[in-house]
Length: 399
Image (cartoon, rainbow, N blue to C red):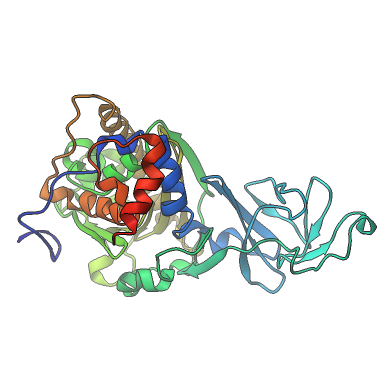
């Protein structure tokens, strides 16, 4: 057994190959991923501080579905399909806002209470009696964990978020994440790459020394990955003893105040928790963030995330948070370029697949989670597009 990632043992004889190249360019597989990987797994919509007041809402459009999260008059945060029960219109059109006392469909004026029940239809005499619950907005599974709002569009193989994250709960609890507030709001951007290629880069630190000069300066000598186990991975690093060759890193380390609320092992730590299939929660001494990827097509990915801060942060904490953002911004741009270059090669007849380092065992374990969800990914040769769903169903039935 090899040991390189904290206390995680890497098998000596593990399979160093990755997913087959065809899986990054198959339109039929993409539709299967949407159904079996995205719609039935927990997805982060935002944080409770994004909807602090009754009537506040956040929306999220992903993989052909539309989610609406709203805080009710009773203070409860609920999730619904953003879909009027009359003709399917969006009930709210904006990404974020406040609807005060009710949700009013902009198409025909059906009105919903903040708890999702139907208040009334426009020109009600043109309909039979409408049951207020039966014709209410369709609810989504929703769970709030450490302040983060998770939803899923249908029940799936994962346990509750609390159970999923239980191995890391004590560590994250030190940061009082539920008490944080938004920094700059929820951001989105697009990358010309398959979503799995973005995950492949993010799931390993082998490339940090070569590709990420700021991260290497900040924590390169201390960084290690722990692979995906039961749907969650963890990566950990603390500041290098002599960090500071680059301007952002030098000033970040200099300005960042002593985080008195954290225990000593976490005072200078950056920690990343990967949540299968497509999300990361990252904690730093002065902030927490989430980021995630959703497929738009086989060759385009929506990236989405947000950073949250302490409500009582000092000027020094605010400055450190901004500098950490600069470091992450540059890292993200570097990762997108690497993802594109790797993804391009998979369309070539010369591509023979990955051969992974022990330092990339996290990539393999993420792929193994994908193979468990979609057994068709075990096929090295590309099947006919029309056969992918049927083959996956047949292979899944053999488990």
